Structures are given as structure tokens and as C-alpha cells.
Image (cartoon, rainbow, N blue to C red; front, side, top):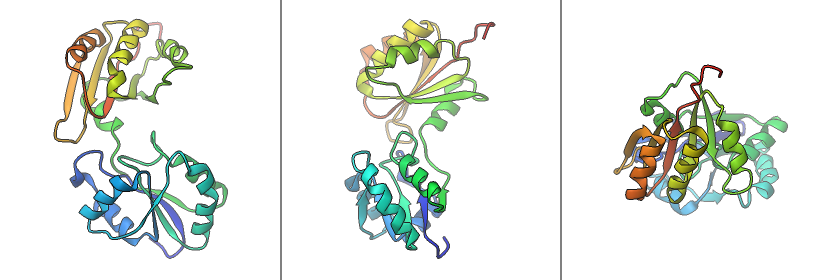
Length: 230
């Protein structure tokens, strides 16, 4: 990192701590300020990496108010590293607002390549990877049915994040809107001790997870609409 202030987005392991990169460790050691989504979780990572630095809280509940002061800190010459509980900041995690504010104020922003759950899930799914769309978490209530109706005609492979408590509901809704024979892959606990990959039709996975209630982090990869008209 140069002597000038900048914001660096630092991906952190989504499971196995060995997935951290040498460059990420170097940036965290060199940072003047480390922003963390949950300091309890990130403290364990820093302890594992033997990095003794105070963490500043930066999450969805305070990021709107924090953005201005943080941009000012960087403009003063501070090097700020942003991490989240797991994965790449800004991907279904805090980060977008701060990045946008930095860009608007002429502050340098850098993002290290690294962990994110959607790419391993897509790669291991066995579904087409040349074109895909990342939907993140579907709306829990308002707008959910509308979005599912729109996605029924999507021809690209679709990637979703979902809570284990809503997995069966989501798969059942996919069967309703996309068709019960649509191919699907559910990836659970990627890069962790109990990683599990299940492939099949949407209906087959509804039946499996109804009988085997899941735990942990979930990524769902769903085949796109293959009708010739699309």
C-alpha cells in the first residue's frame, strides 16, 4: 500500500481460515483502521493471524452515518481495510455505500481478489457457467412473488443466497414458478468441515431437505429456462 490514504476491501475466509491470502494478511497488518461487521467474529480471525489491532464496527445499522467520517479519515491519509464476517465486502454485505462515497470524493478504492460463496457454488454445480445472474437473497415478503415470476423466463444460470430456515420454502417456490424438473444444486457450508453439495431436480431437493432439515450457510444454483423461445 502507498503512503496515501485509501480504502481496501479485504475478502475473508467463508470457512477454512487457510483460505486467507498472503496479500490480505499484509494489508490488514499495514492498515491504520480495520472496519469489521461483527468485531467478535473478526477478532477471532485477527487473533489467528496474530494481528493485534483495534476493530471499528461497520455494519448495515451504522454505515449511513459512518460513511462521511470514514471518507474524511482516508482523506487525512489513513489506510482503511474493510472486512465482513466472511467473504468479499459489498457482496450481500456492507461496503457499497462506503465505496460509492469514496469514489464520489476522489478517494482511492482497491478490492483484493478472494473468497465469495457464489463462485465455488456455481463452479461445482454442474450447471452452465458461461452466463449467470447473481440474485443474492430474494425479498422475504414484499416483492418476492413478483421477482420469482420475472425470473421464470431467465435463461442464464441463477445463483441465490438463502437461510437454512427458508430453504425448503425457496425450493418449493422455484418448483412452482420454474417447474419441478428444473435442475438445481444446493451448496451448504462451503469451505467448512461439514460442506455438502446436493444436486438434482428442484422437486428432488425439496423432498431431500424436507426429510433432512439443513443448517449453515446456503447457496442455491438453479438452471436457467431452456425453452427455445428464450
